[in-house]
Length: 231
Image 1: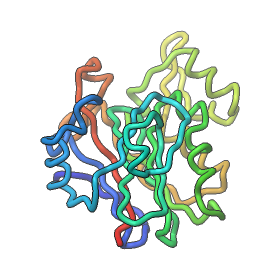
Image 2: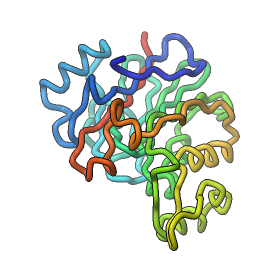
Image 3: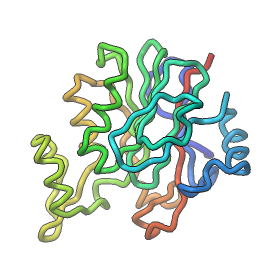
């Protein structure tokens, strides 16, 4: 296996993938060099160069256009065929999104800061309505048994979204185990989105498949999650 393909009911002309540790991996700084790009192109038969983001754990969303390539953002979207939206992760949660008509796609990089700040909500402001026409895939992230966080993370969610409390399990004193998948699902459900798939991997535990920033003490590569509308 060289990559993951979402198990979701997207239209056939929607192409979506997440690379694996064994097939393609680059650091946050060298993903756009020519050898990395050639490997990614060969692996996935991309229709064009991806629109890369400079990810900062923000709630900034940009349209996937050549002019925006390399801009600071943590999500991108497009209605244009063959424009490749991409995010990089290594414990954070990648979300790939399309509508049932196959005329819109988006990719989100959601770490805890982005989720708490509203990166999902900010991205879907640009989505076609009704939002219950969207299909979501939750890509590989650190699992709920491995993501221990402190009071600052817990408070950041509970302050703005009390229902998030259900996604935290008390651990050591002043510590909780946070479920990124459940946190994302709660936000999506609040928007009326019910077709949510994926969310059954753990980047920390499944070292044969994934890079993990926390497991590897920050010295690690990144997976790429990509989506586009094929013409």
